[in-house]
Amino acid sequence: MSELINSNFVTYLIELRRRLLQYLMVLLVVFIGLYFFADKLYQLLAIPLLNQLPYTSHLIATHIAAPFFVPLKFVAFLALFLTVPGLLYHLWAFTAPALYQHERRWLWLLLVASSGLFYLGIAFAFFVVFPLMFKFFVMIAPQGVVVMPDMASYLDFALKLFFAFGIAFQVPVLTVMSIKLGWVTAEQLEQKRPYIIVLAFVLGMLLTPPDVLSQVLLALPMWGLFEIGLVICKHMTKNNK
Image 1 (cartoon, rainbow, N blue to C red):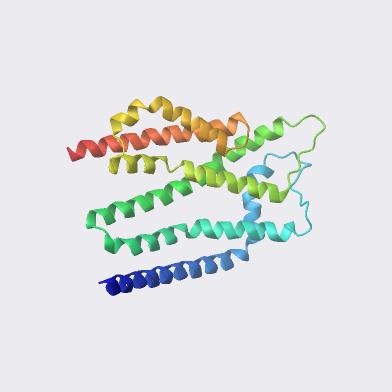
Image 2 (cartoon, rainbow, N blue to C red):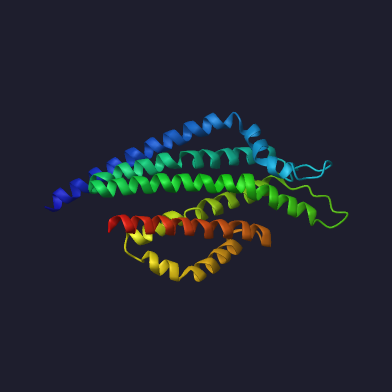
């Protein structure tokens, strides 16, 4: 019996390694493909900031190797972001044989929704939050101060906010999961709405730069997404009755 268990365990490990190697190969191919456009891709990333800077200002490099390594770092993260759905698919395919049919369907929907919301969060940060935030930062600069951000610092700042908004936009998925797994009910979440709103603003304060604008721009979508998840859960509960 123990030999059979060990054999199955080894088989699962081999299958998991095979799928991870397939994903890493795809990641490498995407990274190499993006590498040839690294400079142009970084220029696109910098557009929200450059559009708000004064005419005489521009991005600068404070380290001699930054013009090479900063776009390379951005391309590496971009390749990772773009291939995350592939990684999630392999994880789903690895676990699917051990699940019931309805569990497979729910897990697949969960992964698709989670990936879509992650990209939606990044898009919201880039197209909505960045222009408003950078305009605010440039406006409040003291008189006589020339705003010339460092290109490496800007990349780190952008990646941090992309990740923060991508994670924050998972709120509907977390809400539906919590109710689906029986941890809470839709009625209990509705009763705790005031606490959840406060939590959204606390997370906005922790995940964004220390300015009120960016905190509010993260907290309000989180609150709205919670309400959307709550509506979905109520609809699911009604259909199950």
